[in-house]
Length: 235
Image 1: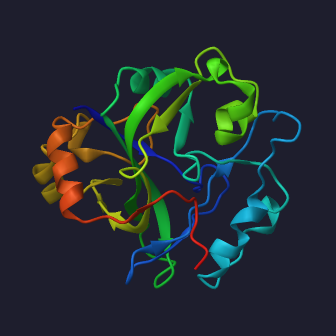
Image 2: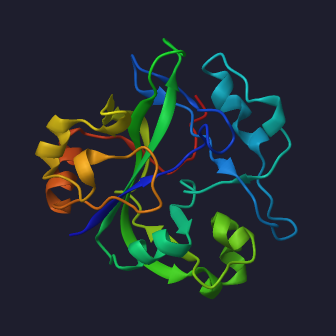
């Protein structure tokens, strides 16, 4: 088994905002990044659909995002994830049964001025990986990379139902040390480490790979995560 850590979700470098998390319960709002490319007619997804999820935390989306298109990826409703370029090449080396562990930098509602909460928010056990250009028209709506005209390097991952999805409650994994956000040292030990120096997860075009993905997967199963095939819950 192989696996990668994949950072997703809106943040200060894309949207200038972090989605909220309630540290006491692990509940969080899943909000995706801005869409920078032209979308196919009739396939646009907008930030407005995240308004109810954010409102449950007593917050509002920044006004600048309302009405704007969003790059809804991963699409937990359809259990897909798309990528391009170097990241897509890394993912394309994986196979059916390998894992993608999604994490995000979230803003705690209990202490908005404090450190971000770097936490796992989703898990995919891969079913298949395909070039985005090979996806048939009737499935274009299922991923951000087919809602627009995909490039030559774009891929779409499909995850196995039942063992994949968004975490109903996030699992914090990060801490701020040595001037950056990194995976906590005790977790690096439990997982068998990742292939980036000192667990660095703040920002990188290169996806960290688990040195022992089976060990990581056994660890996350022990956390008894509740996985849902939905980008945000209704309640």
